Image (cartoon, one colour):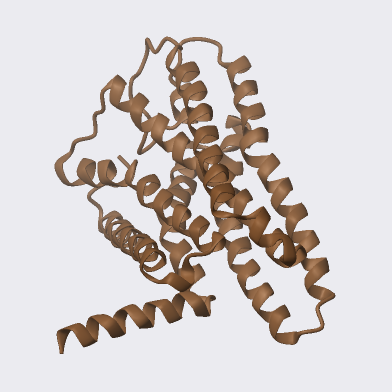
Length: 298
């Protein structure tokens, strides 16, 4: 379990519950706003709604089990349950990695090729790109889950983590996992570093285009939108690179717990906050919905 009965841990547990509740409420509200407001029916907001949809399930794979474990001492999990948790965690995490790269491509086309934007980012193209990211995420999770579970676990069954994650399970394996850890590193390159390189290249081109804009308002709007996305990218990719790309000897189980809480609980809560606070269209849609709700009550 991540927490014990000490006052500081009770406070931290309460904070995790509050942050999880805010993450669920914020992302659900974001999906609803984008669905309800016709002005947000654009490729950028369609991708953002997918990000919020992913975050709802991504954080729910681990946090409810952690909360139940602390409140009712349900700290055990079956082998099948562990495999399922590991699969869905990697499936949704890898899908989000790919989706963030698609969002960078969307911003690149919108700012650097605005005349071709309607054809390059048509609704059908968006659906295909999102479907490809979901498919890529499921393929990555299927391979990694199958490879991790095929190892013999004949010693201790106590996971030094608050959920079933590949690095924490590999520590319990009764076999040499060196080759698989190399495979895991290669997978990390494909799922993490390739999208990061793509995002970096996209934003380098965007920055060059923005600096060349004559319109101050256009430059400000482009930078505001892109800075929101870059903040989300750094918050999500940074901890994942630390967990999956660095050798196990470089981080302890305690450090893994802290980093995992960051990207499983905190980042999903921050995503809708970052996008809504920096975006006039989202805040405008929010005011419209609140206004309609207020009129409905009178």
